[in-house]
Length: 404
Image (cartoon, rainbow, N blue to C red; front, top):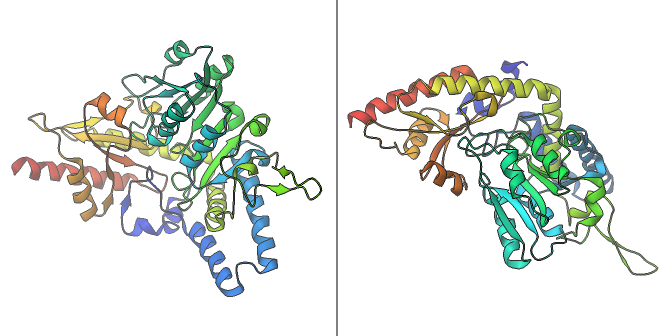
C-alpha cells in the first residue's frame, strides 16, 4: 500500500490529521472528480441529453454490479438509498409485522437502528427486546439466544459500534438467527470499507450500510442488501417512477422482482457515481490490506494514547476486538473528566480533527456513567506520526489544564 500516493489522493492530509472517519471520511480525488465530471456534463450538455442519460443509467447499473461483487452478493440483491438509516427503514417498514412480533435490538445501537423499531411498537404493535452487551460492548450469543422466543421475527445489530469501537462476531450472530429461523439485519455503517464484508459468508438476510464513512464516497450514499429469496416478501415504503410500471393491457401495477423495487424516483446520480469511484479505489487497494492497515493503526493508537495519564478507553480492551474507533475520556486527579469538547477545540487549532459527543448512543453513555466522550476514528490514510502528534498535544493540554 503506497501511503504517500494515498495521501496525495487525499487533500485533507495536507491540512489536518483527520481522525473522524466514523462520522464521514474525506473522499479521495478520484471520487471528487467523478462527481465534478458528471455535474460539468449536465451543465454543458443538459441533464437529459439522450446519449448522456443512456451512458449514466448504464453506469448506475454497473455500480449496482460492482457493489454486489464487493459484498459477495448478486446485482439484483442491491439497492441504493440515501444512507444506512433509510436502508434500515426500508426493512423495518417492509416486513409484514403482526401484533406481538418481537425484534431483538442490542443496547449498543444508535438511533438509526433503534428508532425505527420503537416506532413500530407504536404503529404495528411489535415488541422491542433489548439485548445487553457485556462490559466491553460485545454481544454474547448465549445471552441473545436466551431472548429468542416463538414470537421473535428479527435480530438486528451494528457490526461495529460507533461509540465503543467493538467489532461484533457478526457471522456467529447471523448463524444464531438462522438456527432459530429468524431474520437477521446487519447495520454495517461503520464497518463497510474498513472490514472485509461478504454477505454470503455472514449468511445475513439484510445488510445496511453507507458510503460516506469507510468507503469514502460522498454524503447521500446508502446501500441495502436483501437476500434474493426475501425481496418479494417486503413491501416497498416508497413507490413511483423508477421502481414501478403499469401493465398497458390490464392497468395493473408492476414491481420489479429485484431490490430495485426499494429505489423510488430519480436516483441520486452524483452520489451513486461517487460510490462507484469509491468502490474502484477501495478495490484497487484491496480490502484485506485496508483492514490490516486500519487494524495496525488502531493498535498503535491505543498503545500511544494509553501513555496519557488519566486516559480511559471505552469498549474492548483486547485490541483484536476493535477496529478504527477509539472512544475515550481523560480523567483528572480529582476524578473529574476533562470536557472532551475542550480537546476537540484545542486539537482543531493545532491541525487535528477528532469528535466528541454522545454519538446518539444513550444506552452506552448510561452504561459508562458519562454524558459524552471524545472519539478518534482512523482510516488507512492516517499515519503513526499523526497519532504521535495528537498524543503529544493532549499531554501538553493536560499540563496546562491541571495548572489552571
